[in-house]
Length: 314
Image 1: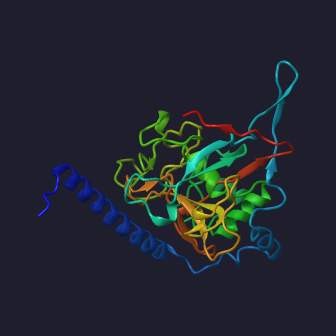
Image 2 (image 1 turned 30 degrees about the vertical axis):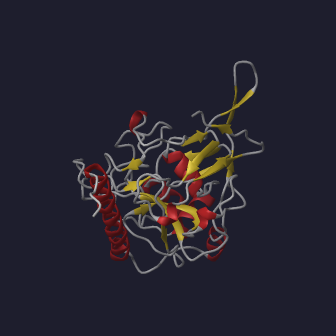
Image 3 (image 1 turned 60 degrees about the horizontal axis):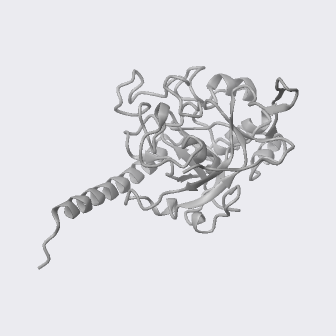
């Protein structure tokens, strides 16, 4: 009989526990999405023209934004449009590697991808902004400074198109959530963590704890200055969801599968406890679904020039 090394046994036990908790969490997500699901009204709430524009993989028009200023020496320099952050491109390992042992299969294999510079909204889209553009506010948790929720993927894509932007790819979203770098298994400055959760979470002690979304900007940003990547709402991405996509993803500026039945959502929401969701976790949801735990933010490509990718410094 082989005697188990106590340390190895403890590690295996912890790994088993993490896997079991991960399975239970996935089941909980599906239950929650079903409970919060409203009869799909996303199609009815959009005009035919809006729906046609929204159904594209990435909006062909209006997704490139520009905000350049003259520097002191008279040369043009790129600055972010109002309400957005300029994310400098680079290469990073997307997805989940060998740690922790309970990564879901759709987050593997970890693979290097390279992105061009892009813009992304500093905050999730608020109810005030959405109502101003779309003329309605379908949110369950009312509050003009709270993020919009209870919106379909089509609603989100239509909004971004109307304001001259687009939804982010999930590769852009993860890169931004990681603070524009390939994060190690440790904390980074100003709240960047590999696991997403604190302090916008169920059980973290805020005044909105286990009750509702919080007003945007209520908690510290990550190192890029992005707010709410860590727990206010899940966020729609433009990509079709494909559980096996990482095995064949291109290296440069991946845009997801060519077709599918679900769209990617990323992040985590106010409803869930800390420590479960990470920057690499992926979930697929029907594009016509809407619920109280999913919102979005917009992104944009830089207009009219090729951007140099910068290899991350190890």
